[in-house]
Image (cartoon, rainbow, N blue to C red):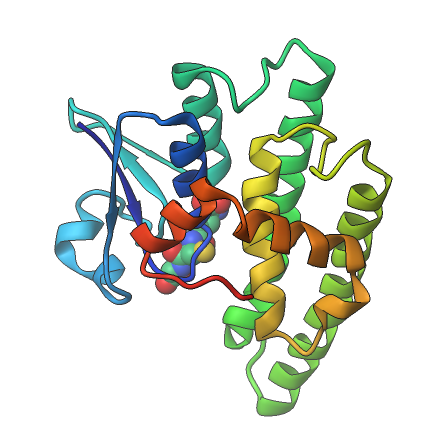
Amino acid sequence: MTTLYTMPDTCSLSPNIAVAWLGAPVDVKTIPYGDHKKDAYLAINPKGKVPSLQFDDGTVLTEAAAILEWLGAAHGSGGFGRDTELGRKEAEALSYMTSEVHATYGGHFGPQNFAETDDAVEQVKRKTYETLAGHYRRLDDTLGQSDGDWYLGKRSFADTFLYVLSRWIEQTPLSIDDYPALKQHRAMMEANEGVKTALKRQDMEPIG
Ligand SMILES: N[C@@H](CCC(=O)N[C@@H](CS)C(=O)NCC(=O)O)C(=O)O
């Protein structure tokens, strides 16, 4: 069976939720933190990151946006066809959230990768939170202006990644209270049965 590898508190929650929403025949396997750097997992994904999706024939797909793309294409509704306006917007939102917002979190999760001295590390962190504040403002505005409760008006995979981001804000000095649309979206996601299932599968709790 196709297997999705996840780890607690990571962005792999996004495809995990998508699997739940689609009812896709995908086995979700949560590995403990640390196992992602061990040989057994590195043989699956040499990048040593989650998520990874392993197919029956042993081939592997990495990168959250690509995995979501495949899930939508292979298992139908939940992702929108890329020939529709919603589909184009979903692709745009997922690219933005993964390649811009998630990537900015590099300065939070590993500031030492961008600076050599303690002072410089502090500066990287400061700039990271400034940049993240701008991203959260943009996400909150987009959500606030959407035609409905979901990020694109209708439920899409963009909501799964947005939920990851609205959880991570708790690890930063930023406050969800400054982003009311995101706060409401997070609560709505946590009331959703598919999200509850995905959280359990990944040994995670709702933020509440
Ligand atoms: N560009 C990748 C990023 C994947 C990624 O950074 N995953 C994180 C969890 S959110 C991870 O596995 N981190 C473990 C590590 O780097 O040690 C994607 O979008 O899937």
